[in-house]
Image (cartoon, rainbow, N blue to C red):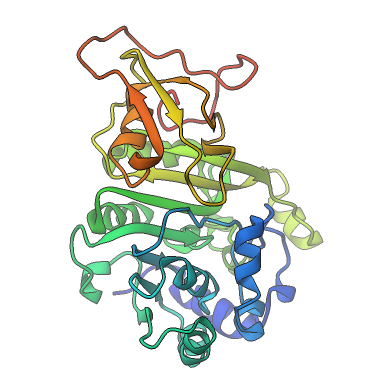
Length: 346
């Protein structure tokens, strides 16, 4: 199987970039602070693996002990080895990448990390392949609890196929959490093929509205934005080429659930119990659903389903069902301003 820009991406990440210091923009660098409990785990990652990390966020969800997690575009394995610690010896992490040089680094350090974590049997493995065709790697339908990806999907020229594969391998109620680069307009064809812009995660950035349409086509009618930060174009040549485009690093959460295409009001109310480790006082489902421990929060039917029909269920109490419908849910951001970038009205 072959995809446009494949050789460019392999050469850029396999040969041209030797560490994150070689990047020309902040696109492929984390723009949000890693939570403290994850930063502590980062100390257990080999320096060589850390140095060859090109992510743009921290898409590591909670409640992973014993889970089966898929890391798409795992590269040298930094996030996979973080996840390895979180799923524990009873869980499993599978990393997928197409770049030989990156996979060599990841595989070379598996034994080192298992010894560091105190695992007798490795709970992480790396597969060479394409994120557009996970079936070719033997990854079965409904076989993962969680799928993560960190600034990689933008590099694919068939993003719809990537998301179709993600929702195929996710179990019902499973979670997708990914960070990537998005744009406020469609990328011109010439820039979409520019070697440096592609390698810097800009050339393949999805226009936010095209992403919304794509997710509807693959059956995801409501996704949630956790964070959104502008990308700085620090290189003068890149600014000259693409300075008219506003780029953003965004972290997005989605679930394999039969959600409605807008938020509907069934009179439901949710309480967070404060029982998710590392989140004793509050838990953010997305950028406008902050659940404070013990405080009731009215929620739409989609949000209620995300809390009740996923692994988050034991940590929330939801009152009400779908027996009575009250019309569309008035979903607004803090301060009462309607949200503009949404997968549904939430």
